[in-house]
Image (tube, rainbow, N blue to C red; front, side, top):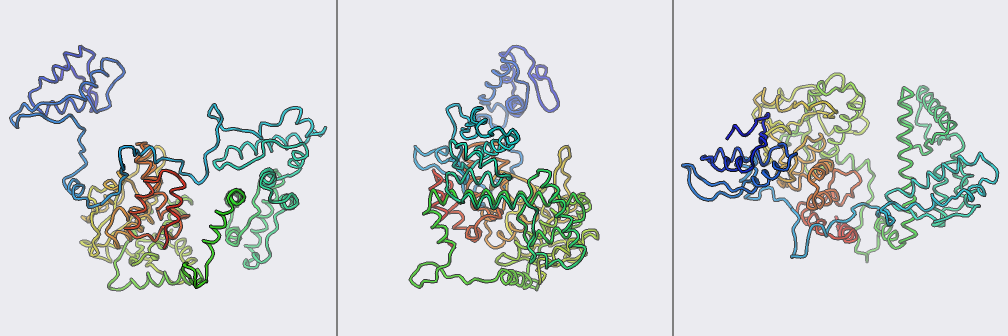
Length: 610
């Protein structure tokens, strides 16, 4: 038999001989193990299917039913199925007994299909397309050579501005959100458009021709601001007392004006936080990057304002409803809840003391081990900022939990101590954590420690309050051409310490490394609820999108939709979604998957109340 199969690595490629000869030799194997071994490799491995006769052979082998002919028993074996070698007996037991209690899409009736529930799940409606399936460009294609001559009126210098305006209109027509624009404009309207110098002013003017707001005088007044140097609010500058900080602000204003005179778009919306950031910058490159960040934020706010303006004109009842929901009613006859308006600093201080209270005998420690920072190439500034951001988010998530952990940040490296201390001192009057250079191996007994590692093969089935879980303080930015090196698992094996991973494969069918703050959120939820499906709501959306990319089917799309709408990992999600208990979370997760229209889903989400 094996003379007719050529081994290539771990695969077998059939020799181009008679189909009947190879097929009959497979069937003549007397032992079931050999039959299964050969057929499995032929039917499921990546082998050469370039020739037609090989393809027909594989199609026959996939449907082949193997007979038990050995001493182990006789009878009919079910059709060949690719085995799952990673699934252990323990995992089978968990699936059979539904320990994870996973919510999956279900069909209701014969006519119900998953495809019927799919719709465009974006906040903006899809673009209108013409008969050929291309996005319709009306206004940007309405300028003919004859109309262009009338618009320019013998002034050829205006042609460049006209071409730039047409390009801006074309980009506006191609945006995901469909802004309502006029199908054509008069010669005077085109001349008014090219008289405006800034893109934001021109875009607002074209949109106002349909919306009726803002007025032309307001647009021209704003355009004059864009044509002049940036003027900072004197009240914001009062907080910068040192001369060095004021000197850096003046340098920033000079570079801002140089870019504006070179024809570059520059930001004009500067906040108090931006002033402090400008005063700390040391290089021209850093100031340019901050300027681009400010510009991107201003552009997003600009288009959000246009979107809200259009929604208010098209559907005024919806905007009135949103305003009513945002306002607090003090009417005794109203069924709305009266909420006291606490200062954010007061609420933050209460969270801090809630976490400090756990630093007692009854508190459960949670360790973030920072000893791996020397292996993560933290010499790059972006990696350091990413690590600091994850630490700050972890502290915030932990202290806002119902019962926080004793957050122990151990093994702080000397090069990271001043930066981390400075960042933490800005965000907390009371330290809801313990920052130490001491090792957790000296602080706690080894038999209580459990290393959390994505490379472990042991699933963390149940949270044990007697165990002390250790999260690796790792910034794992996988680069192209580099293989991710496991760090926490070798450390646990070297010290003979237990290790485990989150059972994401059993719940969502994916396995990946998580950020530090994601692990802290999952552990807080599993400690309170013992519900893995609910606790893994902190799963980043990118991981589920990766699964959807590898297996694009309607069921996965429904899971991604429901998870995205209710996941607290999204910073823009409403507070009422974060406060859902496991029962309500499962209920609305299932209901979102069953929605067949966007309006039905939005009405469902509006029903959620704290």
